[in-house]
Structures are given as C-alpha cells and as structure tokens.
Amino acid sequence: MIYIYLLSILIARVVQAIFSKMSSNKAGNIAVTVRYTAYQYTLSAVLGLVLVLGSLSELKIDLPTAAIALLSGASLFFSTFFGIYGMKSGTVSLVSMFSTAGLLVPVAAGVFLFDQPVSLLQGVGTAVFFVSAWLLIKNSENTYNGFSLKTFLLLIGAMLSNGLTMLAQQMYTHYVPNGSISLFSLLSFGIAAAAGYPAALILGRRQAEADGGEKVKLGKTLYICGAALAAAVFVINQFATKLTALLPPVFLFTFINGGGTVISTLVAAAMYKEKLSVYSILGVIIGIGAMVIIKLC
Image 1 (tube, rainbow, N blue to C red):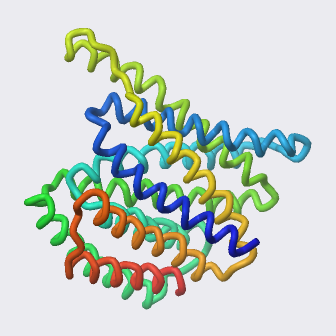
Image 2 (spheres, rainbow, N blue to C red; image 1 turned 30 degrees about the vertical axis):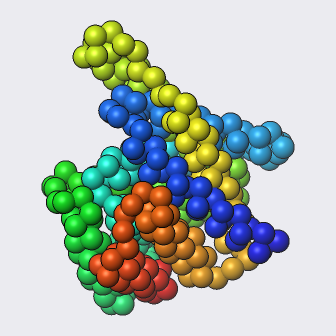
Image 3 (cartoon, rainbow, N blue to C red; image 1 turned 180 degrees about the horizontal axis):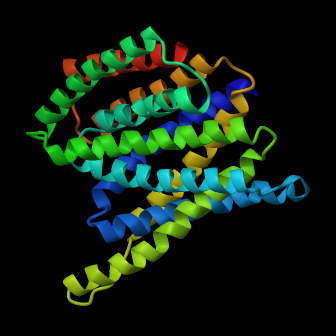
C-alpha cells in the first residue's frame, strides 16, 4: 500500500502543478479569485464529509479542535489566494519553493509551543534557503522581465500562510492526539469555504459595479481547475497523513514537498514556457537541500 500511496501523491502533485498555474492565468481579478478559492474548498469539504460520515460515532468537536481548525481554514484560504497571485508575476518553481519554505513557521513556533529548540544546522539550512530564493528570483526576473516588491510580498504571504497551515496540522496532532484527522480536514476546508463566500459576495458586487453591472462568473476552466485541485489536495492530505506512521518524516517531507517543487518546475517548463535555466535548476536543488536540513535537524 505504501507504493500506491506514494504513486497517488505523485499523480496528485502533477495535477496540482498543471491546474494551479492554469487557475492563476484565468483568475482575472480579486473577486473571481476569492469566489474560486471558496468553490475549491467547498469541494474539498464535501470529500472530507464522505470520510467523516463513515465514523460518526468516533467524532468529537471540542474547543481545541475548533480553534485549531479555524487557524487551519484561514491559512488554507490565504495560501491559495497568495499562490494564485504570486504565479501571475513569478515562476511556478519560485512560488512552490516559497510555499515549501513555510516549514520555517512551525520550526520557529516550535520553540514556544512544543519546546523544540532551533539547532545551529537549522539556522544554516535557513541561510542556504535564502541562496536558493535568490537564484529562483533571478530566474523569475529573467522570465517575466522584472521582479517587483508586490511579487515579493505575495511570496512572503504564500510562505507564511502555508507555514501556518503546517503549524495548525502539528498543533492538532500535539494538542488533540486522539482526534479525527478526517474531521479536522472537514472543518478546515469548511471554514475556508465559509469565509470565502461572504467576501466573494461583497467583492463581486463591487466588481459588478465597476464592470457596468456584469456579474462575476468563474467560467468553465476555473470550475474544472477547482474540481481537479480539490481532489488533488484531498488525496495529498489524506495519504500523507497515513504515510506519517509508515515512513521516516524526512523522507516523506522530501518526497512530497521536494518532489512537488521538481514536478512544478518541469510542468511549468513543458506547458507554460517557463524555461529551465541554470538559476532555476540550482535554485530548486539547493532549496530542497535546505528544507531537508531544516526538517532533519
């Protein structure tokens, strides 16, 4: 079963790489992006509900579960939002690497929340990551003929929000050790969707006024992208959770996140004309190495 889980995660990563950039290209304004994000997480919540219905007798929603799920849902929503906008002016490999670097958030928070001190090697790994970031930024600058402060802030947003998502997962397993992962996923996805729809309604009205009364619509492509990404995220979350009990965490982290960055880079080169360069190749390799050092120590 381990090989089936790993293969499924790889396939889901390919799907994620293809449709993330496609949705970024099609989401033309903030109103569409927010509505699209809410739609995507609604589908993820429905998939989570299917699993939860199979074990209703074991479910328990307490205050820690609800509070951590609230953090998880909010960070998931903003992770998708920043990722979509980051890919509009930055390469896929750059956004993917900064999202993976969100690992720095639970590492730093672990000092206060889990009594896990930061080691010297983790500091070295962080410094190495900044070398990787510089290389990938140079590649993105060459690809998009520039690199703006706005793009940098979007990347930081993607890193922090994805890091908070990782932190929420770690907090849940630490503070609610006997909790249901399926219930936590359902609540997280549901909160992300529930927060998105009111915002989408308000932003949609403003956008409609600016467009002369034309309603905000997702369009066929974004509906397809949302469904594909919802399924991909669901598969990755569920199978990765199962594999945490079967494989060493460093291998699993490298496989899921490092493999995801490599796949994203190759897909972007093949489908979206983001050419491979010395900067991008070295940036990805060094970045993955930096994240492994941070995770290992």
